[in-house]
Length: 279
Image (cartoon, rainbow, N blue to C red):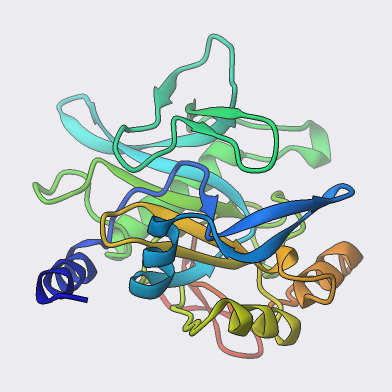
């Protein structure tokens, strides 16, 4: 690696905190199908995916729904608007296209093509009725407001604030809630403050780690900003994530590596034994 490349990587590590991560991600290795399951080969997908694995940064991948905060002007002030990523969405709701640049316009690796956009979710959005009613918008925007108040998310009215911040939407109402987040709706931004860094010397090491630890996978970012992924359930049939996620335990929270979480009450951190509010 030449000195110029070292400088690029050093610069990227200092400036990539809010890099946008809203598009579907290609896998680091090539894949093959076995029935309805997909697995990795021991061959890298491309030269760039190889560079990403060798020179990039690997952060925890979280099991949730991809969402985004978009900085928008409302009544002469900027505010965060909340969007959910939708596959091939067609309708009358407010949508935002994925920003151009590092995002894939169309995703297709080992299957059907997908096209994505972001669908706006207003603060008064609810689901369900009666005892099953969930104030989705109110709770989600409360997470955002509390995070800005506590300095965990940037103030949208500051000049150095990014236009986009993407997040995982997690909690009781989202997928199997493998991390055991004790809220219906909570957010995990896609950057270092919230996602633990994971050291992976080789693809073989990742396969072995997936047998020992229960986590969904990692997202790796190339110095040019493009991101790729590695999923534990695609390493082998013996990975711990598949065994635990298929059981869907009544007492969730089986993951070994956990992020920090933004909730309506403040920042939630895992102490090693339980979730604890830090502010």
